[in-house]
Length: 203
Image 1 (cartoon, rainbow, N blue to C red):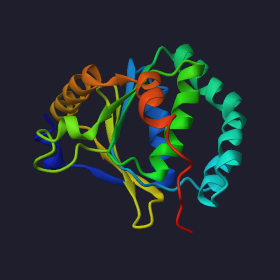
Image 2: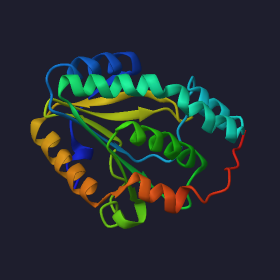
Image 3: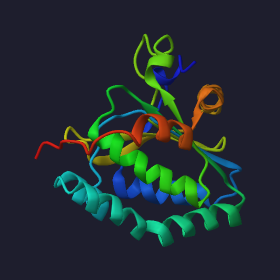
Image 4: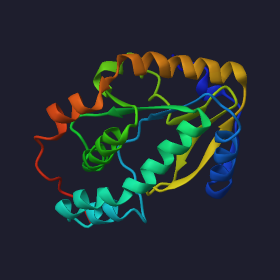
């Protein structure tokens, strides 16, 4: 499904350059943005909710998600104004990691505001991942595709930028197939996440 991805030719962008390039393409008239999220442990320094989560303050972490309401609404409004249809697919491994447990609360809030997000159980795509995990990728129409890069500590560190139309089409087709198989986030959350006890976080 993503057979050609690992051999694709890319340009490495450091984080500031990646953000600049991303928003330039995002505002250029693309019809859609698709994001496939595969990693199970990340750091989101500067996000108050994540900082509380990382400090072991679970109730506070959940209460602080609401602070992002205006930011998320502006993002959705901008995408709507530009005519960019956005979809996101979150791969979840079991047992659920503390980070993913926290993140799914954030994603649930985003869905409440109007985001289109689905979840897929990693166990159901083991056949696809025999040669390695599906890529951590952001696809902006048929113009550009970014493999998000993280440092050894889980911090966002930039992206690898791909522009080969054939590779973008193949990766987009893979995303479409997985998104079709994905489960609505609310359904997954209510069944798998809501019953969980607050996670234990190593400090």
